[in-house]
Amino acid sequence: MKLAILSRAPRSYSTQRLVTAATERGHEARVLDTLRFSIDLSGQEPDLQYRGRPLDDFDAVLPRIGASITFFGLAVVRQFEQMDVYTPSPSNGIANSRDKLRAIQILSRHDVSIPATTFVRDRADVLPAIERVGGAPVVIKLLEGTQGIGVILAPDTKVAEAVIETLQSARQNVLIQRFVAESKGRDVRALVIGDRVVAAMRRVAKGDEFRSNVHRGGTVEAVELEPEFQRVAVQAAQIMGLRVAGVDMLEGADGPVVIEVNSSPGFEGIERATELDIAGAIVDYVASQVAFPELDIRQRLTVSAGYGVVELAINEGAALVAAGTTIGELREMDIAVLTLHRGTTVIPNPRGERVIEVDDRLLCFGNLEAMRRLVPGRRRRSQLRLQPLPDAAIDDA
Ligand SMILES: Nc1ncnc2c1ncn2[C@@H]1O[C@H](COP(=O)(O)OP(=O)(O)O)[C@@H](O)[C@H]1O
Ligand SMILES: [Mg+2]
Image (cartoon, rainbow, N blue to C red; front, top):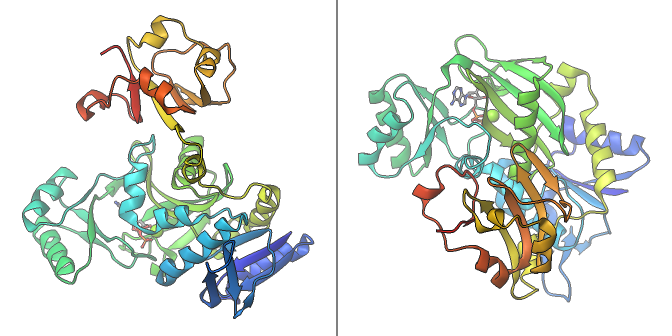
């Protein structure tokens, strides 16, 4: 495999480890400076120039994009995607994770616990927002902070209001978040590769600091994660669209609370704490996936006019259930069921003889007209409350 590592810091620990791990495994790895690419859209096909010359062919790209160059870095990764080069860190996933608000918005509809969070603009809405997340003390966060910078614990409402007003007057967008007090000064970082957690560590803040970031003096220790923490970490990474991610979770009273998903997690702390070969695991994973470049399903499917992807949530009293409809019968209506969510399990490519049940969720690709006939119309939110995920719903209403 020929691997491109996008990094502005060729000598940094993580970049060096990736190069070494790839080379040890007989792959060819090159570190390319993200800012020296030119995105070339002048020819027949999407292309990239590097340092003014046509770029060699690569099988995979591992982006390690710092927060300060997110915009350009994302454009470069997106260009690799258009050129069908595999990446475990698609541009969409990186973009989702970079913005704390966007990340939490996306996670919030799934079965992943996040701290109660609000986002407001008008001064008049600040106080009610603080109350909604449980009142002071509250955490105030800049949307695009890293390393603990821009994360503030406001002890009372007065301070919270003052901090928010100050930041907003400096044109900064801020989140207001419930302070998960039982986790004060500690969090868990799970390193997810593909669909499993390969390593995990607990970070403990220094002194009476509440932020456990290593850059804020936090110390690290290896931990064996409980299955629920592992499930949540993998799910959070998948929801964000990342195959390699560092998922940060607080240890809440009711289990894991996801606060952040990092698209370029550093390896130094976690490799030292766990003595595991994270870089090697990433390289092995990438080598196993190069045949499957990232593709934007919606983008590709618009090519087939009249077809699309729809999620159908089967409600109480649905005609399909009353009729004992099977997956195979939907197929005959020109609707292919890609996955069937039933309870806590996901069944990919369900068999034709399976009978549809109440509370099933079907991710379908098919004839939009045929699917529309099954859906009586967009249901209102008040009706959707009990159903966490429906984009569309079937019932007899
Ligand atoms: N809602 C919260 N309750 C308690 N502690 C928090 C909360 N949010 C963040 N922290 C602490 O602050 C640290 C930094 O927050 P985080 O959102 O991860 O920002 P950053 O991107 O700067 O690391 C976390 O690692 C955690 O220790
Ligand atoms: Mg963090």
